[in-house]
Every structure is written in structure tokens, then in C-alpha cells.
Image (cartoon, rainbow, N blue to C red; front, side):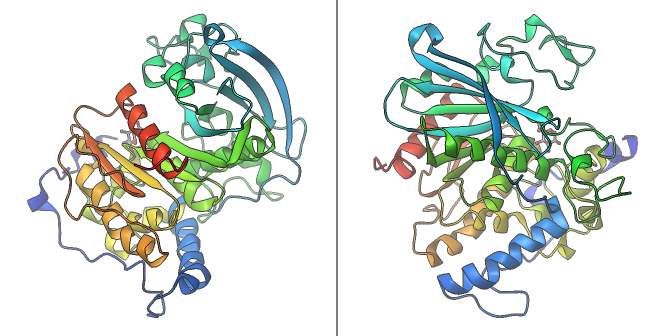
Length: 412
Ligand code: GCU
């Protein structure tokens, strides 16, 4: 850790080394990708494989059967304004295996609703002070603020993160919200993958993932897909309009979920930074070396090859966004969140844009980095707002404005 802290952090554009980005529209063998067909048949599968192999690690296939149990349900939640459902989703084919608890709030309507699918950091009970929400049972990071003691939830956890989750507002705007605790999938600490979902997929004798097999981000993204498996079955939700959203490490996760699972109708990443929307080759703020040192479990082991060696990586993060094309994608930065490199996040969207255009849809409509609070809400969108690394109510207003235009088709 000390060693990592001694690393020089680049916070000045002038200190960024010169680099050349891989071209999303040139295949590994040099073939120019000049049609939607060539993108879909050659370049997209090639990039998917490279991200799996070199960055996030390959995840196993979905369980054969979707198994879930609705554990709680109310049509009178949030003071009568919403419906609430709690669903235990079995993550493997083993009925005794791990379970992810999905909390869903829905507007009261007879129509299936578009829904945000997003993971949370401290358990479902932290998002809203609602006594009916089950407290998380999985390992939690200790926090006296959030009411986590000895890695277990206390009653104080209820609503402890509610400033990030304007549930009533979301529901009033006609959207559903589905959320699960990321630790139900894989607890967020480096234990060489002994707990969480990974061991359930080890071959006989295997003790840890191979260098090209899934790290924690890929596992969380895979868990988001299991949430979507359920949401597609749920008649109250419009399964064709599920938006993957996430903040920070879970913003990296939302991007990878959207790239690897084309059923997600759109993706919104908030302050996702290094390994998310920010270009790794810029090395601005958090670097590949730094993230692999502080969080060795997030990426696959092959990603370590690119510590201080970003230029050798066959992909960069603009190609992650390109993998989401032609679906709507909104990249959100915060002005004071320099660690996450807002300009690098903008440039990723910028350099992904030609793929959107090749596929016949609108890319990012701004050529230059927009000013703070001048959102660019094109189908591939970018916004930088004032303030810190966080999720604000005003962020959610913007997500819904974006979703209204590009998922609900209400026009901008
Ligand atoms: C750290 C980490 C980031 C990450 C963030 C978060 O700051 O360096 O990469 O996005 O935590 O998830 O809150």
C-alpha cells in the first residue's frame, strides 16, 4: 500500500504521456471495419474476447434454470405510492447455493414499467428507511456511519444511503427500481476468491480463477444479468427496457454488464473512472497499476500485465463503450472527482462515437468536452456536474431525462 501511495499521480494534462488509442474500427488483423455486419461479426466478438481475456475475466454461463422466490410483496409501499417486491434469486443451479436478494419498487400502474437495475454498496435496507426491507445477511464492510458492526447490519443501516436513492421520485416518474447488494454476489475484499460466487464454478481441484477468468467486477456484472433474468420474467416490469446503472466501482460494473449482456436496453455509468469509462492510456488520476494494487480482486490477473504498461493493452475503455453500441449510454462525471479522470471519461465516449455512427444511430453530439452542467444528452451522452464523487438527486433527474428520450422514446 505504501508503495502504491508513493506512485506519482498525474493531475495535469501536460504530464500525460503521448499515446495512440487502438481503433475500434480496425480489426486485430488490420481489416477496416466499414459495415454494421463487419462490426457485429468480426470486431465486436473480437473486442468482447479481448476484454474478457485481458481486463475483466471470462464469466461462466447463466444457470440453466432461473430459480427465484418472491419473499415479500406489498402494494402499499412508500406511504401508498408504490409497490414493493423482494425476490430471492438463486445464483447457481444448486438450490443450496448463493442467493441474491433483489428489492424492487414499482409505480402503481397496470403497464409493465421500464426499470433501473443497479447494485448497491451496503445492502438493500440502506437505500430507503423502510422497515419491511430485509437486512442484508452477507458480509458487509464495517462502518459506524452506516450501522455496520462486526461485518453485520444493525437497524441503523436502514436508509443510511438514502441520499443516493430518491426512490419516490423514480417511481413518480414512471420508472421501476431494482437493486441488490453487490456483496450477495461477491464480498468486496481480496480473499483470493474463496468466498462469494467464484468457488461454485471451480473445476475439480481449482482453487482460484485462472488469469483470464472473472474477477469481482465481472462477477458483479454477471449478478446484474441474473437480476435481469428475473426482471424478464416479472410481468410488472418491461424486460426490454431495463437500464443498467451504477456508481464508481459499480459504474465500472454497469458498463461491463451492458457490454457483455445485450439484453440491457441502456447503460448509465456514474463516476466510473479507471477500468470504467476513463481511458487507461491517459494514466490521469487512478492508474492501472494503482487500481490493481489497491483492489487486486476487481480485474482478472491478466490485467496486471498492463501496470505501467497501458500501451501494451490491446483494448482501451472507449472500446468498452463501443461494445454497448447501438444502445443508449450515458457517461456521467463530477468536476471534483479528478481521481476518476472526467476528461478521460469524455474522451472514451468521443472515441466510441464512430461505432454508434457506423451502426446508423446518433453518437456523441459534442466534439469538445462540455462545460460543467451543460449535459450532452445524445444517444451516446456525456455530462459533467459540479461537486464530488457521489450520486445526487439531480443525477437521477438527469438519468430519467436521458431514459425518457432514449428508452421511453419521449424525445429529448
Ligand atoms: C476507489 C477506487 C475507484 C472506485 C472507487 C469507488 O476510489 O480507486 O476506482 O471507483 O473507489 O468504487 O468508490
